[in-house]
Length: 212
Image (cartoon, rainbow, N blue to C red; front, side, top):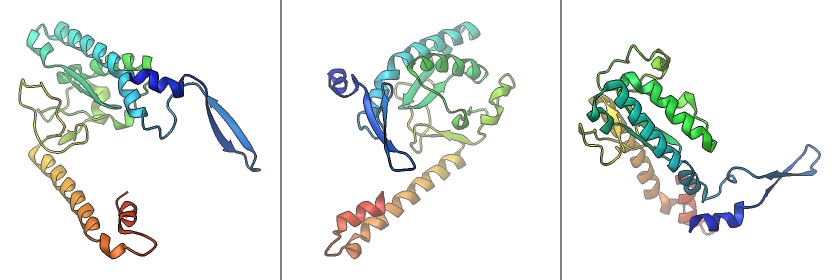
């Protein structure tokens, strides 16, 4: 149902306008990608990478099984995503190989990974010696998964992807405190809305400017 709807807008060349230094309009036609600011773009992106993510996960599972000869280790492997944020759950010494597999599959969709945002962590608190190329990405205290705060992964229970910060107690506490501080700042701005109301600028408009 979604594809025919989106096709009405993307089954043709999109026209974009810009201007040169003399103020003359320049027309730019695009056949690939989503238009900037299109509210359908997140849905389209998620559908676009879904199949390749599933295929990559199966290949990573098979790789882990072959490397460890342990069926249980394959069951605990996961590859999931929150839009373009990819999370890979594998034994530490196989992370480099798993990343290569996932990126190879996603590249067929046009996905380009930002290596500067790569973060790696494991419960032992020590990076594996077998993955030297991942040393710059190592985080000793923990990492935030999918942008959410505070919980842990129960061993062997991966029925639901964690939406949390995982790591040391101090790290998770710091993430929770930062989230609480951000919530308080937003709440204080909401509480101050009546003071910003004017005849030409209603409080709700002032609130949008304050909270954006």
